[in-house]
Amino acid sequence: MKRLLILRHAKSSWSDPELDDHDRPLNPRGRRDAPRIGRLVQAKEIAPDVIFCSTALRARATAALAVEAGNLTAGLHPTDDLYLAGPRIYIDLLMQLPSDHESAMVIGHNPGLEELLEELTGNHHRLPTAALAHVHLPIDRWRDLATLAVAHLADLWRPKELTD
Image 1 (tube, helix red, strand yellow):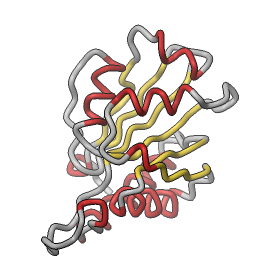
Image 2 (cartoon, helix red, strand yellow; image 1 turned 120 degrees about the vertical axis):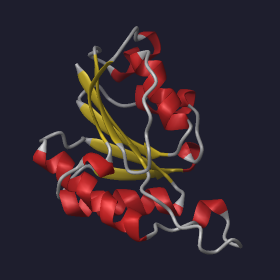
Image 3 (cartoon, rainbow, N blue to C red; image 1 turned 45 degrees about the horizontal axis):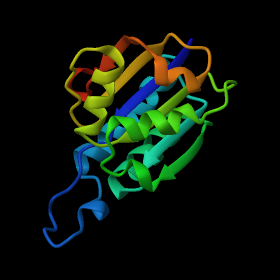
Image 4 (cartoon, one colour; image 1 turned 180 degrees about the vertical axis):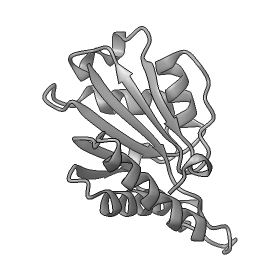
């Protein structure tokens, strides 16, 4: 069985209307929530073997803060293709992983991440900013994602529900 962590980027700032969407930074709430998610991943002992994130500044900042706070050792791979990507892009990327990776994390944007979670589990789940979904994939090889019937949502954490 493989595990997938789906993390929507933390809350971003809209304070500069001239700034390109790709270059929007995290706002104070986002800078607070991203480390909380990293610590949660560490506390739950679900650290991924590899992390892919969108190249958007808010996604890269979310990844960096979560990795640092959670002492995560996974390789971090910013990927242009994940900027505003749909579920098929995520699945195609994950299918390229070697089988010895037991778990992966993707960090990106809505609506693509909600659509990915729905495609995998068969159910719609709301992913506000900095929400983390933990999905069990009943496959032995990542390339088998193409033929996956239904995955299991093991847990879903939203920042407002966290107590730390």
